[in-house]
Structure formats: structure tokens, C-alpha cells
Length: 194
Image (cartoon, rainbow, N blue to C red; front, top):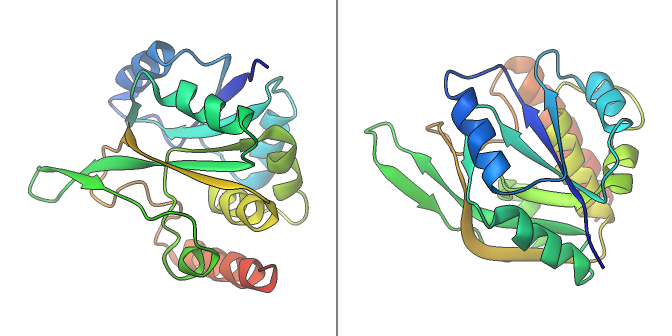
């Protein structure tokens, strides 16, 4: 069974955007969609409606992925996973590269730490349903929390596949008042669905 994979490139175009694109092409996606600002959930939902792929993942402009990353995501989904996430690496305030080794799946830990970060993947139909309802500013967090809550099979691939250019790792929401309010509502919704 061949699994097709689409990549959404999120966020404002970073100075390293060409580097992001090169790394994505090396990893051989089936489809690439730019999803830069505005990237509220409604505009992202419309972009997703144009995708013709089995699974979706997100890469933030400026970040990079390893060449085997998409193949690992495809293999996990082909084996029956609904939601897959990997380890990543980020740059510290001092400029050092730091691994972010994530724990295996735990619904309660997800609620307290939102640790999946990137790289993650899920089935396209689950993404579409995760964005139905009122638009939210933190659309990627909405996808991750809603699909994670609805998934029957979660897989953690304990390999670093994502290299974040940011000091906070690949946080799934912005620390703005609107972002924090939206995240709080999404976490409350997630907790109710456990």
C-alpha cells in the first residue's frame, strides 16, 4: 500500500525559507502547499480541501526535516497508526543545538505538556474534521489536539527528524494573549474528549 504525503509550510516566510524547501524536496513529499499568513483555521481548511494525499504534516518556514523523515511517517501510517510524531532538535539561546527527546504517547501527559511538537502526521480526513467548527487562531494546535484525542493508534518514532530554527523548539502555539486563550480552550476541549 502506497501512502501519499502532503506538506503544509506554515508561518511567515523565514529568511531560511529556501533551505526549508530544499530539505522538504530531499525528503520526497507527494505534494507541497504553502500556508503562510494569514494562516487562521479557515484559510488552512480551504488549503486542505485542495490536497490530494493520504496524510498531512506541517513544517514551519525556516525549519528543516531529515531526508528519511517522510518515509518514516508513511511507514507508521501504513502500519495502522492514526497519529505519528517524532523527536526534534532546536537551537538554544546560546546557539547550541539541543535534542528534544519526547516520551511515548500518554493522553494525560499530552494534556499537561503538549509535547508532540513537530514532526507529526495524521490522516487527511482527520485534519479536515479537526478544523470544522468555529475558526481558531492556533490551527495547528487544534489539529494536533483534536486528531490526537480522536485517534485510536498513536506512534512515537524515537528519531530526530525535525530541526527547528527557533529557541523554543517547535511550539505549536504563539505566546500571545489570543494564542494562550485559544490554547486554553483547545486543551479544555481535549481533556473533555479523553
